[in-house]
Image (tube, rainbow, N blue to C red; front, side, top):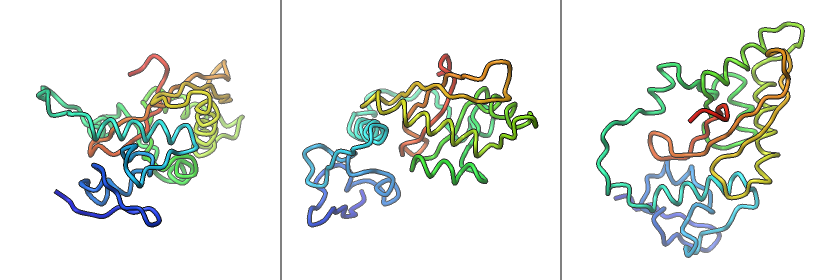
Length: 189
């Protein structure tokens, strides 16, 4: 058990968050606290609200009721090339401008990004393509309040014959149960 004190102004946390590690506490918004906690404050941003709801469910539901038969970690998926970590180089800076949680994408999404960047006629770079994707996810996210999945469309030139691509951004627990974001094609899980 951890006994860190989370405070907001003169209010002290009275919910499950105070029992989490300091690292996990730093990852959470005030909106992830139990709604009856004095520290709780709902976020005005719809994507942050979805992240808060996901974290609250993750930490408060009884996940230990069912035995784990097999587990495939996010780190293993990145190592295997199933996911691509977007928190590197200039992409990390762009990602942090839009979201505070780690972002990865599926290999299929990264392939679209890579084709756009490799097509010299369009002058794309990874940071620019990622910025466009994350900006559009936030724009579309405003209309999908309270959802842990945001479907969005973005224009990416140079990746192929079409220029409009549909994606989905999924917010869920990472390997240490902190919120993470994954961008994938609509048909991917």
